Length: 581
View 1 (cartoon, rainbow, N blue to C red):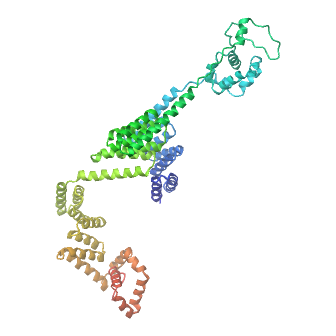
View 2 (tube, one colour):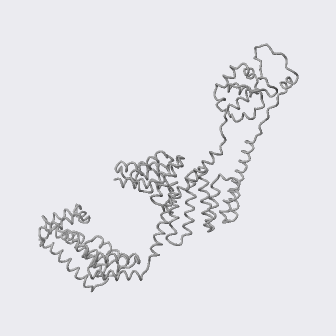
């Protein structure tokens, strides 16, 4: 039940239906709560939905259940990375590499986590420090203090002063722009409970209350200073200008991308590369420009350049915290380039690792297909690299010598190695089938005999091996059919003729009722497990036929004229279910 739920979960995961996958994995976990693989799979599903807290919980459970399984630490690192817990992610990947130092997925995950952690630290160091006076301007308390102080209360009647204080309250760093305004400095003194000196002299600056009598008129220079306060500098619209310039560059970059796409469709790859490169220069935050150029390099056969662009795209995605789908796309393209470069079976390893890593980022059916194709190609290439008919013949001869000496297990080993060197040799399958028969491994012997016949339908040894196995399994009717089929290709083969004779003897023995009670009981029990016998007995027509054979001889004679009915009756007789007296 757990395996069935797991299989459903894997199928849903492969199709991108992560919620359904989680449902099935949860069902499997309820049935088998100590299976670490189920928690690992559900962690991957949660991570695909960006539910990293749940992914982390399942990853921790995976590691608890199977602490020496490196994949559990890969899940743990991915969950920490999704939660921006970079140091925890680095620790998880390092722990996994202690268990499996050659695991490429863990190595790549560690590099990604370290890269993101470094970028995060750099951004933190580059951030501007908070204003030391930020707390003084917070909340409504600022206005209450300014109103309560007789000095600053009058300033609240000045619209430009109120506007300046509002700006400073929104962004305390703006204070630097108003340091020359004596009113702002006086307000700062009130808020901080300190007094500031006026620019013009050493006395504390005094400001009359709104309802108190005016003080004596100040000297002319002071009057001029009051009448002509230094104008507040207008802030330059830097942010607006920069934003406008940035938008213009993005628009130009999009036009370059469109031109590159058009050139790509025309197969004008050099022009497409020029446009994508220009787009990258104009806007380094759009990863599609890099992946598009990588696609062009892939079409041109410049696989090294394609891989470099894909690596650059992944690195930039990490820095910008882009969508995981974009990372998976770049990794899939890199894996495709690595497959194109593969010349031997080992060359497929980095491609397979890259596809697997892409699937951990985003479960995409196209990537999954590429992974399966790469694994299949690697296996086929391994077989081709291992193929050697000469060594295969030598191993088969060694197996024959062991067979003659009745060393059947050793003979099986040599025949197996022979088949690895040449999997199309029917003789090796035939000889191994004989060994399995001697060892009593009848299902394995039957499988080898059938493979032998499949490779060479005219090879009579295949039929004698298969018939012998069926005979020992007491499936005499099936053995008889096998021997007869072999005689079609080799009518004078004595082994096949002897096999037919032995099968007929056993079938007639059952027909005459010469079986002992133990033999009859054993044969009937075996027959009742045969699906073909079960179908005959469950057929209502055959049920009536059997009744007629017992109660209606005339009807039985009519049934005997039907070859299909008689063939079924013969099977029941051979199986010991029916006896003819």
